[in-house]
Amino acid sequence: MPAGHPAGCAAVLAELLPYRRTLDSGHGDGDGDGDGNGNGNRNGDMETPDAYPAQLQQLAGPVAAGAPLVFTLPGFPCKSPHPAKVLGPLPDEGERLALRFLDTLCARIEAVHPPGARVVICSDGHVFSDLIHVPDRDIDAYADALRALIHDEGLTRLDVFDLRQVYGRRLSHDAKRALVHDRYAPALEDLRSLTRSDEPTRRLYQGITRFLAEDSVSFTGTRSAWQRDCRRRAYGVMQRSRAWGELIGEHHPGAIRLSIHPQPRGSAKFGIRLLDAPDVWMTPWHSCVLEHRDGRRELLHRADAERLGRLVFRHGRPSHFVAG
Image (cartoon, rainbow, N blue to C red; front, side):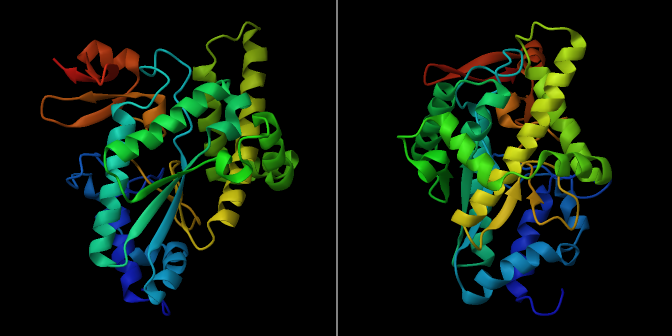
């Protein structure tokens, strides 16, 4: 372990490594299966904490001080607007399992770092609403249901943070987005240049463009116009994402930054995989859960899951599919 880092940092990082979300081949593609039993793919054990000096540095201060650890995780924005991907606009079994996984991960960290750990879910739907074409009222409903789910499941190590905590409820959502963008977003030309020169940024741009293209269910223009629109919005999403990250850093100084996107070694952000999925970019809000006969849960697009299983309801709402 690099000099100057308390030994406890490596123990904490060792709990995260099995669930690292990455595009690197052959290492760290472990998955949290969300069932609270620690049955994720343990490929991350092939790596050691020494390979992640940025995360060791972030952990060093609170570990040395014997303070609780705070992890920030941007994500959980809203459900995809595409009906072939999801079961509806509200959280379902995918979010429930992902939240349980995060709470259980904090409990595992507490076993090696007794002051404990919390994950602040930085729900970013309002940051991107106009770019992803999801109404703000649906995003409010999703975030409120997310908080209710955390409460009902007794997940005491999780919190939710969104633009309502930053700017209150009096400003319009458009005004809030403008404040975030104007204060924190990088220049568009700088981002375009980075996309051309930096491989992880290029992959992120391609992944976001693909998601936006898949979710463009009502575009009526030509194919070339649709592609240009998706590329334009992808850059907007990346600008806002960076702006949201800067804002989160101001409001949660000293927190360790997690990401739902794949991250290369050396990144200041640690990519974390919430549930098993065939696509490294897939998340609970772009898919739904299929429970296999052996109990394994997998994220799939709704159109794929409903071919393989029967629909299950929870509390009167569609929840997930169970393989027949």
